[in-house]
Image 1 (cartoon, rainbow, N blue to C red):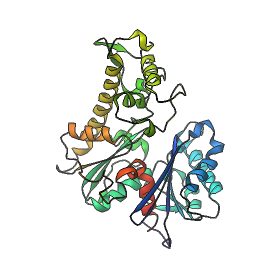
Image 2: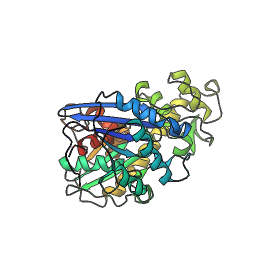
Image 3: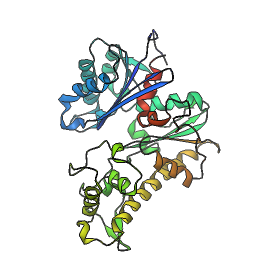
Length: 346
């Protein structure tokens, strides 16, 4: 990775998404992370304030920043070019005087001026950071980063990121990007029918419930992990969760039988695991058998289940805080930001 002048101290990794802004700093064995939900499309003019807040909580005044963005895809922008440039301007406004570099899908870190001149090279590059970091310790592996909105399936071969796609479109076509995540995915986008009274019932196509509702009801996620806005703008109590899931079939909970909502939640989780397993099988078929799956992200439990369904070995240590990897423990939830902190220091 061409970088000039190694920073003398820690570098902040900043990953600006459409719905969450994440930052991390890796300083020796210490990993500190910050994540704030912020829906860019609701108030794009407030993005600079959010970035300043997130980075400020790390208390590293003046520290250089390595940046990636996926926020350019939100439809408040007329194009991805406009979106990338908006993120660059907001970051410069939020962090004046700092050295700022921007990751590309080829793994380079560019100056802001270079990134502004080539915005599409910098669109949706956060997965590259995580892949490059994993490739340093695992020469052959498949990284599955299941976040709140999407799932990345990133093959590592011979110590190199071996993805066939680089852009979102290419990665969708090659099964390396799935628009299914553990938090924000519309239940109606996950499956067309759910079991009610043991019979398949079509779902409403309205945005009534999201994947976080299913995983909260099943106990796969805690309320603290659900850093997302729910469709009704209400909270994470079981009463609120059950109300949203019932509306998927145009009902109130009192209209449904015992176990119906649990069956709906189970069907959502099963459909997501199946979707990830299908993509994982497709990517794994391109490489020799034996490469372990590395599962990270808030939805790592879905990635692990998909790997088991594909009968692929799971990396036994990386998800643990005792693994020694900066992606262990909570670091894996903001994997791209953590990776950017490491890569940006070199």
